[in-house]
Image 1: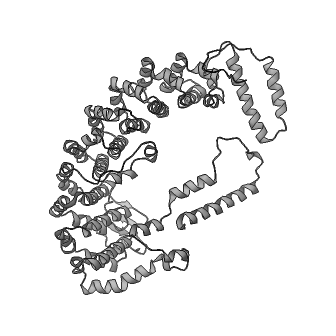
Image 2 (image 1 turned 135 degrees about the vertical axis):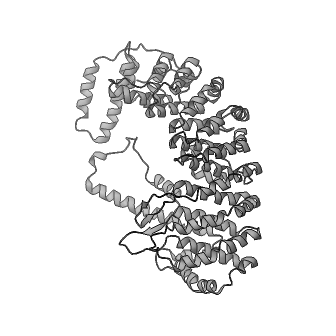
Length: 607
């Protein structure tokens, strides 16, 4: 019954099927007693018949088609008569109406839920003639982007549909869409105003992070964006005057710009003036520290773009071409950050009287996310800033302040991770004065030995971390990081005479020979009698990173293996008979899946 004519000949007049009701009655009777897969296939055919029946009518409405279950499948199958109807300007306008306008309060579920969803799905089927009707008509494009106008309610669900349609146009009608945006610069202002909505933020990221694979005139587009006030508007969204959602989404857009291919937009963002503006927002005097946290995330990305990869959501990375960033930091960018170092360090000294109860005790006061972010920033600053950063950190006394936090909060693993990176950068510095500062002024050896000797949580009520009342004090959670740092010190001492000179104290020599060596032997998984196959014992280690990689399961590889093994057929009806699966069969399937996943886990970890 499908029209096989070439092209898109628009014809709605066709011989109407005779006795449709009788046909449907006979079809239903024929389904009685049939198996589930037969019923599904016949039901699909029945839906197709209903869609064709509507198209055969002399007059019908768009709503009648949208109410049919098979309309999306028929669009993907390029049903000629259906597409010829949907490509008409009036129908495209009505589809847009469902996407950009809220349903009336008394509307039924079809109008408020089903029709907007189906309308969006029709657009993202990427049918060229339908998209062409939209993008080549300025009035229709104005109607589409009128969703961004301030006087609208901006329903999050409709915002998601709007985002999908715009992204589809970006991918399939890139040149025409960018021409429209360049002419209507207010679009960017409206997008930035709604950056707190994640779907709108995704449009911004795709607009500012597209590369030469997406834009034929990529360099000109990026230069044009840099000449607009787009960056000014986004950076201003880091202010504490806005909500934490707005701060977070603005930071994600800026980080995406930094992570993308080098461009005029990224160069402008890394300039001294913009870095100063970012820090102005970070250091605003406000009870909310959201602006500080997210502003520092942007600065961390400027110092070390690779570190920001974990901040940008995976679905953005999967659709964009991110490039390996350069390790060199612009001296002007670094100077602009170091100017605010003293102000940041003052934030680490708090007079907060709040108490945070935890499973192991109480914190007086809690560390807080913003102080953790300051520590991370200093660690990255030292790693990327070179001698200039080392000189400023020595002058400001940042290292002793951060080390004190390491011991005051013995159960904050994120803090311990950043402090470990900080200490490693200090130890590997070529600046002898910096290494001397770590051993002499910071007294790192004495503090580590004292913490390891008194590893149980102190019961002193004046301490920052106090054990829970009525419970036996537990072992501090930073001992593992102390052990790793000490092993690094021993390793450097074997090859560096200057470091070795600080490892001659009798207390350290005794602790290294007895406690540290015994602990390393106990924690060496390759000597365990269980948990590791003996074939791994002969493997060599090139670096600590290789050992860490073997310790952690490669989740991405495991996930891919599982997906390939167990194909998800949630939208497929072929060869499925779920209605006849018994409980016993379900149990057997679960056991088989479990055993297979365990085998994949072992293969992923040890192959």
